[in-house]
Image: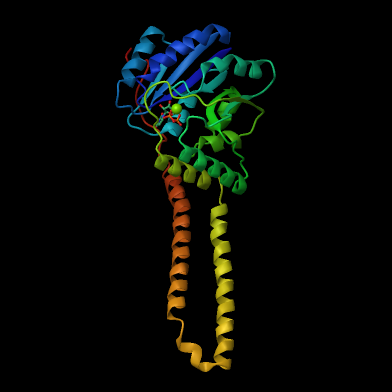
Length: 312
Ligand code: UDP
Ligand code: MG
């Protein structure tokens, strides 16, 4: 059996040597005939590519792809999946937050217990900024309420998949990629492994709160059209309220005609509110339109500038 591991790397020159040592330590316990590594350098600006070239020179099975610029982790995952040749394919971060020591157990689930996917989730969010945990929790609650594709709270991208699962994922060639959703969407028999949150080995996180917010909106609009219906419901609700108010005003006009000139403040406030709601709804529509626009353009998900084997 051949195992491929995909490692997206963005400015990970510091973390990569530690990752390599840790993996080599676990290697004998994996009991696979072949181990292939596909490092995807996602437009790093530090010495990541040089480190990867060094790995490849040492062991030709440690391959790399290097993007022409930073395309994001989602694109890196997709490129890795396309280039991996193993019977079982895994995804791991370069910073050792996904412990390689869990690999033997995960492999056993696929080989002996008949599962198609061995996935992982964090049992705690220890060591993570409080604000980040708070918003992450809210996000999972919200998306699971409005989307038919259910996401597991704390699920990581760290996972092993059999070849049919990988081929299924590769058939989803959408430009706006939200892997957590895509992985769930394709289905298959999954065994979940939990582990405590581990702090990054070296280097810094590539995710700011702002990046995460954009990512969560991406996730919601990629897997649910419920927000569009929300616009319709709010519209209906406010139309109903307006009809009631107008009826009331007409009745009042007949009872007390002098009262008609009052109400300038209430009128402007209601207009502002409605204007606000309309803008939000248009913005929402715009989000979906923008996605459609990008999909229709059919742009490549990544561009490779260099890859292992080129030097020969
Ligand atoms: N990563 C990437 N492209 C990016 C951002 C991140 O390939 O634009 C990689 C990064 O090198 C790491 C993994 O994705 O291997 C997870 O990133 P990070 O550890 O910064 O995220 P966190 O663990 O803090 O969520
Ligand atoms: Mg990390």
